[in-house]
Length: 332
Ligand SMILES: Nc1ncnc2c1ncn2[C@@H]1O[C@H](COP(=O)(O)OP(=O)(O)OP(=O)(O)O)[C@@H](O)[C@H]1O
Ligand SMILES: [Mg+2]
Image 1 (spheres, rainbow, N blue to C red):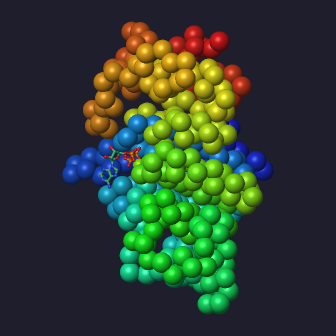
Image 2 (image 1 turned 30 degrees about the vertical axis):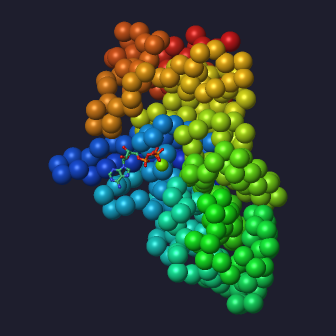
Image 3 (image 1 turned 90 degrees about the vertical axis):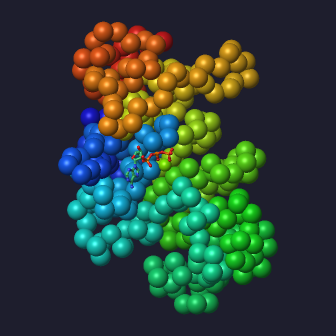
């Protein structure tokens, strides 16, 4: 278990406990995400990091119960303000939750906006539906939202269609829509991956300003450690459907305690950089994971025991969790 997940805690907004995500095959189930547990606190930016295919988006989609029909879940996702497990909400309760309490910026923003409606119409629709605002009120609020995400001349741009905006502007519109109903949790799945580095930095900065002023929690999903380095309070590193390390951001960067995180850190450029060292090999696909530790085939610290039994995610001290038999040897 990653953390003490008391459903009565005042600190926690969301508690995921022992989440398993299965892909239904012809004759069997493939366990894509296994035993994932974490808490997201109020007003916290929580970073979820890992290589492509490790299960980040499926984890995010399961929080909003948006998984496709061939994928099922077990475990619980407790949303504290409602005092309910999201995985057992009725359809009506889910409609209230989505957008209003928890909203999401999807990994492919360019395809998430409807090309045949103006951006103003699309934001106003969200406000009329969830907040019951009149046409005029919704319009006024939509302009304010576009201003909040720093779209210049918002009163004019509100009449634009998505194709009239740059990628960065469209992403800002997505953020405006996602925060329209002041959700308590915003899930941002690779919100800046498609953008160039300068625009990426501006959008992250803007997202952080909104997070602070709205006192909103953000689950920030990325494959890029540099993105969470600038933004997150705590970080969980995923590998092959499992959390392998979880710690406060400073701790994780200063003293990583899982070889996969060490590898990720060695593969990003630093000013005083030694030679960059990519992690050898590729992530095994969910059906072909090795016995024992799932990282064993790529790990330069492996010992015999690593092949035998998968290590648990344990607290190595000060709420710094690692799923490695040799975690204590990395403590400095
Ligand atoms: N609808 C689906 N049907 C079958 N397999 C799927 C489906 N969605 C995801 N998968 C598989 O589940 C695994 C996890 O997918 P997921 O999209 O969560 O990865 P991710 O960590 O978000 O990766 P990326 O960084 O590329 O977005 C992958 O192996 C993926 O191929
Ligand atoms: Mg993804």
